[in-house]
Image (tube, rainbow, N blue to C red):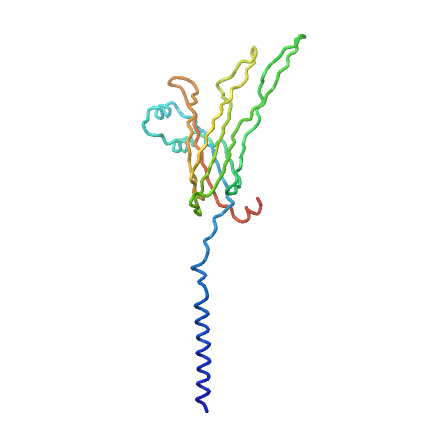
Length: 234
């Protein structure tokens, strides 16, 4: 009487085991089919403009050297002795695929003209010039798209006063001269890293062996934004 019961129990166990194996065989492997983590779309761009006053010896080295001079190394060494300074710092959230414009500066008043009326009264006409830094940035994924590399199109405009030059617009009245520098570039940047670019302005202050020059070093960094930063900018 016991043998049929054992046979029946064994048959049930065999059927249950077969169903379990079939179910496991049909179940997809979640690890193998797991989709890759999508790249971030919200980033933070950090942009520094370092202004360097080049000494006479440094100018001679740049003018006579057959190889490009490392202006970034000069900027780092000159920060300690006061011949270089961080002129502008621009920091802003950006979205991949959308452009953003960052501005740092002020409207500087200057005399445009002076008129004298018939009764001897003078009327000074005042103009305003935007002096400072304007940066346009557009980021997009490199092709083929990669999780950490972006193509960054940026255009930088620097406008400043030329302290050593002025135009006499009336007797004893001088208006300043403004200098404008524009640079644009397309770069492949890694998220979390910084890239450095150099700008030689060609400007000279003074003449002869006592002349000094002006140059800029640009640091461009792309950093991922955490969830709190994304919520605050959303």
